[in-house]
Image (cartoon, rainbow, N blue to C red; front, side):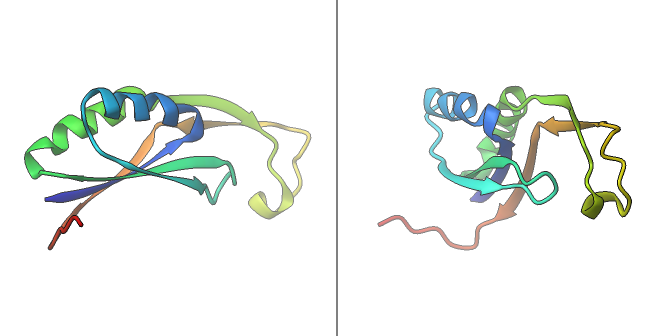
Length: 107
């Protein structure tokens, strides 16, 4: 048994949730906030048999798209003020952790 923790951008969360439902994959959905950009994310917790981990990871990868955006850095992020010059950053995609589960009980 494995626990997949998948952090995705809010824009991708609904599409991913529908893909999980279509494939009969149970996931707990949590609203979270990213630390760097302070933007909304969604974190999915998925308990899954080890033989299905690759399938779930492919699904997450297919539904979580990275995209480029521009942001104005502020003083606390860079140490100096260059707010008149936007910086291109990549957002989206997914950050996933796959952890072993020592024990699983469902009540």
